[in-house]
Image (tube, rainbow, N blue to C red; front, side, top):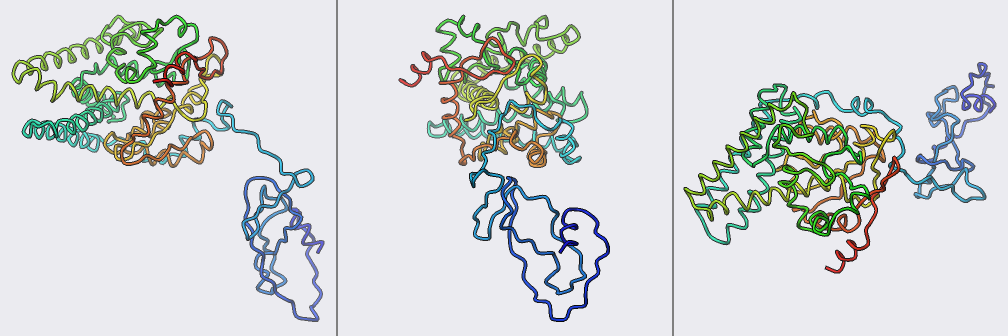
Length: 451
């Protein structure tokens, strides 16, 4: 028995001397138990050495060392409590999403398989070809059938496809489309200009967004409003910012004027958004955008403005709504309050961990799995077709810092409820403090509830 205790304590005992047995050894089956990660008592835990059922008393293989498991469950599934006081189990501290994570960015990177970082330009181009074919096929079918039962279905489908084209151009902007900058630039201009997005202007501001995600002042896209700026907004601006559907139409305004509290334009090469070396790129994209706008005007004369509105105008509006909905809900609207940072509390990793994955049902594949947003924000160079696998590989490292998305029905109508809830309560953050959370303005919340 002393030898067994020393062995269980991790100490090397002296060579045992066993007396020759004078009677048969009775074999017992080991008890069944499971281990969890919360400390509980071992008073009733009976350990059996592994292999003891073979009746070979010289066998020295034991199932576990002396360290007690955190939780023990009986075979009936009942958990026994240990380390509690008078049988009362100790409560674990509540998870704080603003606490510095116990892992580094390099730990997440190391968990992601190497092939997830490989960019295949042929595969990327195949998605472009697929989406372009679908866009033209939908337009041709709608124009041919030309009845008011088909048009609403066409607008919903084509608006979604415009959004899919945007996501592919978005990959070009990140360089995850291919390793060839010229290919990325050409494909990005064709994709984005076709839906009236200035490719380089948007690419540069979106890079700023990724480099400062989760920072109150420095973030570029859908960042929270400090209380001082919020209080300075007139009623019209507040309505446009917080009353649905107006926030879903914000993107074109953002391209021209940016967000409240910021100045500049995505079309102006002298904007604060850009450094002098980027001005030529901005001018190039503005020219491409202007050429597309001129083409649309010409098409309006050829087919008539009403037909152009039905084929392009309304799908464009729905694309804008998709873009604003997705980009907003990837950074807002979670059921748990998530932090925003300033000063020394902000870091690239902590800011990226506040982003939110979303499930879009059938739309996931159509818009190229953009819902896998956490890993995309931390590593935007990963191609979209590897994001799901990369996310699954990173989850064990991220732990509670990763929030599983709600499961969507085939069509993600539940996101409308998420948006409405967020618009009622996520209004501004404090002007001071390095870790802040959204606060609610009761006048907006009450007026939204009464509608």
